[in-house]
Image (cartoon, rainbow, N blue to C red; front, side, top):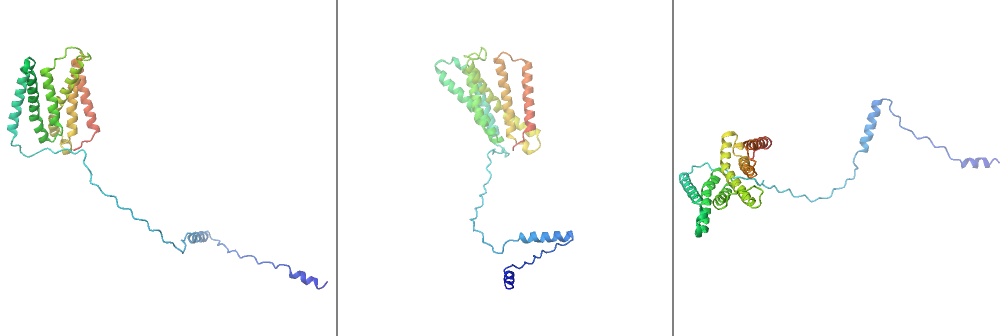
Length: 266
């Protein structure tokens, strides 16, 4: 019995010593410093670093020069030596066009076709001698061909088309009215465009305002639309001085609103 007791004591495990837990500092400041140091050690990058893959460099974007879409020619400021000659030729051409118009070409008989062609060419020549030099000197694109088309069509209608006598919406009279509106719009607009452009140069002081071709063209179109609207009201038999005053007021208010909203482009 005495031998069994020590054998049983050999198989009993020995008690392990408790792990020592580091004592936390009592000061709150030291605790915050210890927690900040622990977080800094955890955020350190690993010692083993891998080399990043070589990515192909992207080519730099090509810089393109800006394209001026709304480019408009500048007015010519050099002296114009041929001015008296051009004015004289344009005056003679308009005089010939008016004489052919007053000659009543509809009574020409067999030579009516040749007279029509002559009248059309005379009006086109007079318009070209007037508006093409103005387009070149003032830098107003489109003035030449619009003047030629508008004034040639107006002269042809005045010479050979019968004057409408019925209401605007009558079917036989409607095509004549529409052609007349088209010709009058382009004729009046091309006649007013140099005036609105030159008037803007005298009214505005800044160069960007003075050379604003879009503003001058818009105002010329407004005058053309005003004349066409008056003709349409006359064709509808409702044209009165009160309606004309209302039309002028509407055009002026619209132009004032556009001038306050849009910026000039020179």
